[in-house]
Length: 418
Length: 80
Ligand code: HEM
Ligand code: HEM
Ligand code: SF4
Ligand code: SF4
Image (cartoon, rainbow over all chains, first blue to last red; front, side, top):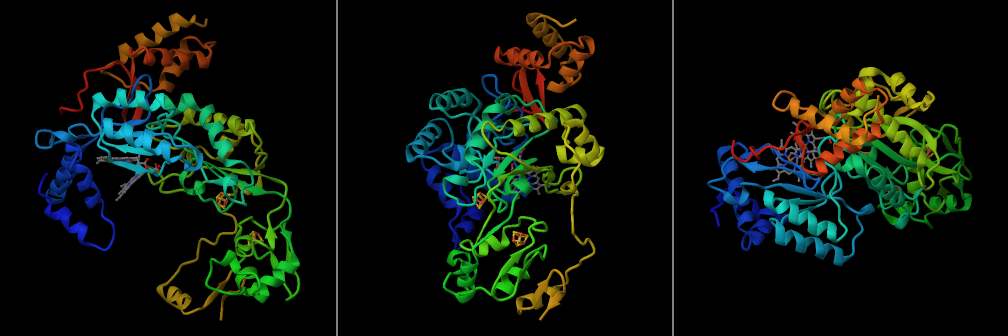
């Protein structure tokens, strides 16, 4: 084992340390011992000793393997090759313990034993193995029914929230949709043929637990079209403290309906006279705030489907972007034909016009929303306006945060109150 | 006129071979080049012709910033 005085310091803090974990593995895996060694060297030299990967691929796949090599192969032979394998995850990351053991056994045999549940793309990440181990590892995975995920300029492994499996808010079957779309785009998942990465994430409702709006080029977010259903007697029970706000997940024992619900509604479309709660549903933007606070009093409507958003990605050419609405509402019934067709048409337009390493959201900025909508045959709609109701001239000062901490409240209509 | 499937595969292989060392071709570049000479070629045929070259090991995917289709080389990245 290499001496690692700098890394050892990381074990002294109050939190569980990856150094401790890696040392445990390093005792039986020379590769992992060298992984610690090379990291210690980088701390000392203050530069990375990893080179960009060259190869990616096994048996006809262009995706799923991320090549990595160290520039100190003589000193740290265990990490001469240290490739990462992306294994496609099941919908909503639900495994049996047997499946997890299978994965760990394969990785113990063919790699460093270090893995990551899960990468931010969603995949199971196997961290570090040699080129000659890739094919045998891949063969063992596929024999057990696992497949590699996307990487490179490909369709990336889609992921979804837990949806109807465990959550009452799901407006459609996220698990089924995630699976169907993964099957539909197999070719593009494994054979990179786009200008850059292309991600899909599916959330069952506007709470957006997989953060689709910020992390996926294509974000599908469940939503209802009709009116929020209200049980006025349950509203009274929340006001009186018989029902606990947010299912007991807040420190308050009763709700101030006016202050906590009505005044915090972002579109100010609710009113409360002490007896009856009213919602102007035409103005509601489906943020879920009121519903999350009083789940037994308020329910989403019954006409359900999803909104399709496009464009988010981390800073590359134009700065970070969130997705914005392209199709405000569509049906989400199996086999999800509309969604498949929409995504195919978008990819076609983007592949035709996109530059190398230009994400689809950046292409919309360059060529304009009109060009996209014409190409994919979607009608313009007010919801496509990128930042409705936003005031771009609002600046926060430290004093505002301090006042907020002392209890001052902000009302979207009246500004600061109290 | 559209090429029959086998000829299409060879056509694309020659294109990749000719580009080797000069230009890295993406799947879309290949599709555009085929369609320029053979405008009635089915796009799906082109996709699957590329798949055949890759599955047979005559071409490989490479990645450097973007993903490309190239003739396999001796793995060089490990040593330089
Ligand atoms: C200077 C060197 C490196 C750079 C610039 C780099 C950059 C990146 C970037 C930009 C991504 C996102 C890729 C994508 O989703 O398209 C990524 C993903 C990843 N990288 Fe690196 N990387 C480097 C070194 C490494 C090394 C040495 C390892 C492992 C030993 C590694 C492991 C990973 C893994 C596991 C992911 C996937 C994570 C996920 O899907 O959430 N990287 N890297
Ligand atoms: C400790 C610091 C960092 C960590 C742990 C980290 C980790 C990651 C991971 C896990 C991803 C994959 C995200 C995904 O696939 O959803 C990613 C993506 C990426 N990272 Fe980082 N990163 C770090 C710093 C940086 C920095 C400093 C830059 C740029 C200067 C950068 C640029 C990127 C880019 C461009 C992507 C691809 C984003 C996309 O999906 O559009 N990262 N990073
Ligand atoms: S996004 Fe909505 S449906 Fe999905 S888990 Fe979260 S709250 Fe439930
Ligand atoms: S869902 Fe949001 S916008 Fe709609 S009424 Fe409730 S708080 Fe207001």
